[in-house]
Length: 86
Image (cartoon, rainbow, N blue to C red; front, side, top):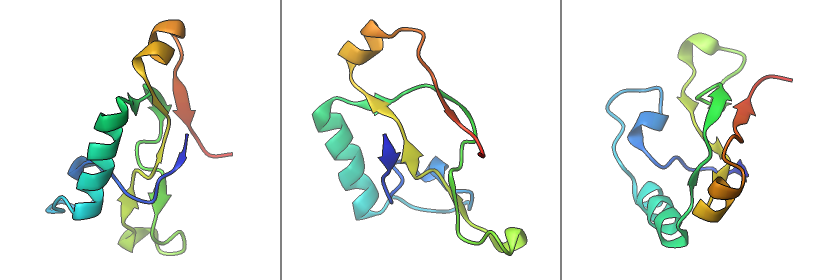
């Protein structure tokens, strides 16, 4: 669980037309190699904004994630994460 500073998919950017970067591909490959995936979550999809002071020009991204392996998923079948404001 944490802030990974890179997205894994282009759909995790609020701006259309974003393409897959080398960093994104490396993160995706690492997660696949470790056999981990995102825990199901509720709340905010985008967890980071470029500018809190100017929301009309903000870029939103999903940088925070909770990742689990199959063993964890089977042990805690009903577990879900939640992204919310404090």
